[in-house]
Image (cartoon, rainbow over all chains, first blue to last red; front, side, top):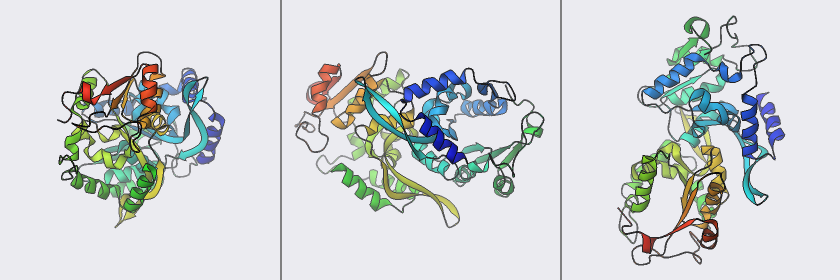
Length: 209
Length: 209
């Protein structure tokens, strides 16, 4: 499952300094293309979500990414693509070790995964990194369920939404039966909890920038 | 030592929700006074450091606290006292658990200390939370040594400073022989590394606001 994949990735990059890893990610992201769309991965951010981030920031919100992905993998490009600086990116993380190489201090990635940022891991990392409860949260799978639940359990106005991947023609269609990015509990519970479900097929005119 | 004290504090507060703990800290901090100065703890922030934070922010810096103290203890008052919001406070931290009480989600403090934010723990938490190397760092004990070292090992202009508590009359005087807040390696190495040592006695006209 995703956990095993993450463990594998951690093992493969362990022993590397954080700066070496950052450079590899930066080099890769400038050329890596999606196998079916042929677009750069960085061109596959969702246009309506970029507009939503801009809209929130223009109205005094501070925006964060809270992803299941490795935090060191996302930070090198999140600012260019989403306008979100490294310190506002929260993700899965592994043990780091401060040591010296050639007399200079380095921070070295270790094989141990210390935080898997999915499900209950999301509200926990929000508390650890951000230290206050979000007012607004958006997700696209059941891995975001607890984050939306935690967000909307706070006092005062709150907003929670799932993006539903239901457009096989222009993007992808998957939800209940998918092994990756499953969205089942979210579809069942959203209407009962007053959360919004956004249909890519029906609600988005443009998908990619 | 400090580690044992932190473990004790963690154990005492475990089982409490993060919101309950925050309320206790907020209540305590509005009335708690230092036993010898008689001032509120929140009135004992250093005036020159507050001015430095303002000056840095006025010049485009984003300011963070990176402290050995418990992050959940500092966040409730750091914004009022230092102008630093919760998400820019990094500290020691314990395990958190997402669970339900009376049908509502809560985050509950667990007894396990997961990160002790001192010495090598500081550059590691800077990488984890902030994800980029500081340009400017200030400390006041050898527990800050690695943070200053990491800061100044980056390319381009860097600034590192230790505040030296050497004013027995107006504040306190301690350094090499002190069991808490020891500053020995820092005093030896700062001149060799081009780091600034600030003498409270000689350099600060006003200490407290």
